[in-house]
Image 1 (tube, rainbow, N blue to C red):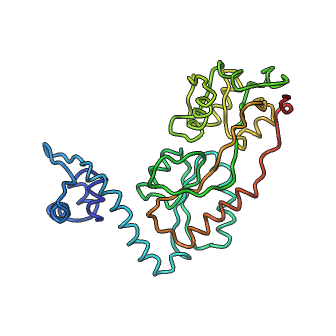
Image 2 (cartoon, rainbow, N blue to C red; image 1 turned 30 degrees about the horizontal axis):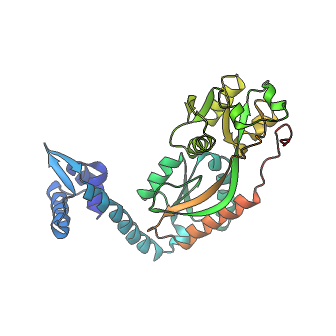
Image 3 (cartoon, rainbow, N blue to C red; image 1 turned 180 degrees about the horizontal axis):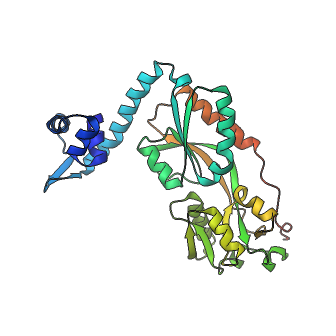
Length: 302
C-alpha cells in the first residue's frame, strides 16, 4: 500500500523508487501484484508515462486510510497521545483568532505533544483531509465531500464593510439589494467565505460579479478603505478596522450573514484520544469567545 501511495503521488515509478529507497523493478512488481490480486488496472502505461485510472483513484482513497490506520496503531502503542503529533487545519477567519487561543490552552495540558497547524482556504483543507495530510480541520460553512464527517461548533457571521465616508453607514435602513450594484471585492474562489457570499446572493436572486478577488483579507480591507468597492468579511477579522474608522459597516435589514462553523474529519480516520480532546478544546473555546461589539450604526427599523 505504501509503495502504491508513493507511485500515485509521484506518478512516476523511478521517482517513487528513489523516495522509498527501493529498486525500480521492485516497485513495478509491487504494483503488478496489487493489480493481479484484485484484477484491476491502477495505472495506464502510455509512451513510458503513467496515467491514473478511475479505479486507481478509488483504490487510493482506501489505501490512504489503511496505511494511516496501521501507522496510528503503531504510534498508539508507544504513548502516542502524550508524545506524538497532531495535524490540524483552519480557515483564515478561524485561524486568525480561534486557533492561537486553542493551541495555547491545549499545550498547557499536553506539553510534549507536537501540533502542526495549517491555515488555508476551505477547498485546500478538504483536499488535505481526503489525502490524510490533516487529522482534522476547523472551517466555516458547508462541507462538500461525502467522505468527510463534521461536528458543529459556535457560529460566526460576516458583515458588510463600506468605505469610511459611505453615507449608507448612517442611513436608517439598508438591504442587501442596495449594495448589489457596488463594485464587489471578494475572497478567492475556493474559500468558504466566498462560497457563502455566493449562496446568500443567489438566495436573494441578486447578481454577483466581483471586480476584485484576493486571498488576503487585509488587501480587501485596504481596497475598501480607498473606495474601490465594498466587501463582506468575517466580523472577527474586520472589527478592529471598523472601530478604528478604516472602514464602515451597517447592519442589513434582510440578511444576518450568520453561518455555522464545523470541525471536519475523514469518516474513516482513526482519531486518537488527544485528537478528540483538541476537538473539544476548539468547541469549548469557540463558545467562550463572544462576538465583537456591534459596530454598525443602529439596528434596522421595520
